[in-house]
Amino acid sequence: MTKTEFLEALRRALNGNMAAASVEDNLTFYDTYFKTETAKGRTESDILSGLGDPRILARTLIDAAERAGDEYAHEANETQFRAAGGPGSQNDYQEEKFTQRTGGTVNRVHMPGWLIAILVLMAVVVVISVVGSLMWAVLPYLIPIVLVVYIIRLFRKK
Image 1 (spheres, one colour):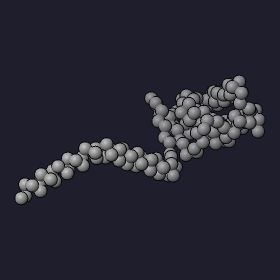
Image 2: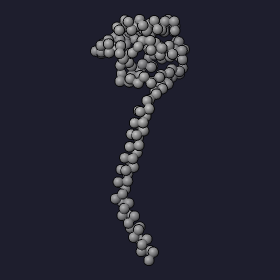
Image 3: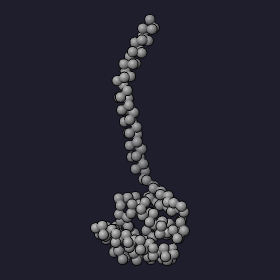
Image 4: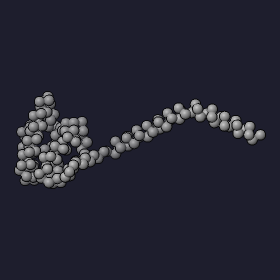
């Protein structure tokens, strides 16, 4: 697929589903994105692979337009784009969903279960490490104190 084919497929998917001005705004946005990324040295195929299927992208744009009201469709698109790190970024999670509300953006990131498990495990290791470090720091002082208290109790009982 080429840039022209991508933009035409995006146009076909958006036409009839949002206002014509919003369709043109989005096409201009992605055309500019292609130019910017090409100027940075990225190839057209890299850019296209980062953007993915134009029909899926169109569905996202249409959903954003429906949630935010059509006049905010282009603004929602740019906000999603920035929040996701832009196409081609290392952010490849398909579980991410972005929503636009009047007055601000709410980003919802759905992390996979394995990632949550790893994060919880890491937190437990950190807590155990901190507690262990504190114990080793306090132990040299605690042992003599406990021994002195034990010896004092032995002599008091007699």
